[in-house]
Length: 281
Image (cartoon, rainbow, N blue to C red; front, top):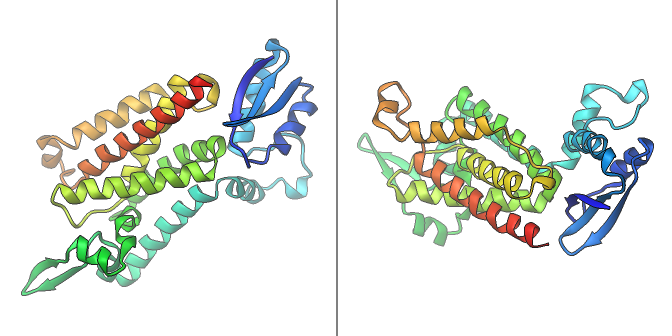
């Protein structure tokens, strides 16, 4: 038998097992230290198994279902139940964006990395240390949920969904939550230490997810992770471009470059660690 996929402990695999048997694909699941291993009996059925796995990862129907329940809404419900952290991130970003449209700068005052105010026509900023000491620990992460325009919001949520769904389906919700917290806080602190207090966006987490998914796909090809190579090249070139003076000349000067780089480094570090564990096993 050949090991094809490793699914985290706690992930419900009943639907996948039923689909594999329905397609007459010989297989076996075993409990390993690092998760639930899926083994293929006949190597000639590898492509057929991968087709089923891909549809399972995307939340698509694996077997015919009654017409009454085959609507798009029910499919989204199935996917949402399997990737709750990714969905929660998207919902929170949308909610904060709507709140900014209603309450404006008041939202920034509460969610920026440090308290903000205006005195004598000038921006006044508080201390991060004092804020944390007073219990405002949410400020370490909350800037990630701030977005300052539709394009900024759509770009970040699109890639959060693309990469986050893979991480959560293949490595579980706890792994996705870990990346959100470590990358979100790490990216925010990197931007703050660079001397910026008014910034926001999920970009740091997006770049962390990119680094994680890319390393897993390269170092553990059988893990199920996938990212087009040209997409990786584009996003790295975009990050480098926004760091140049030319970016400012064409209207892209206010980009959280340190957050992007900090997030990417976090994702690569976590991806290297977990891919190394998978290779060792």
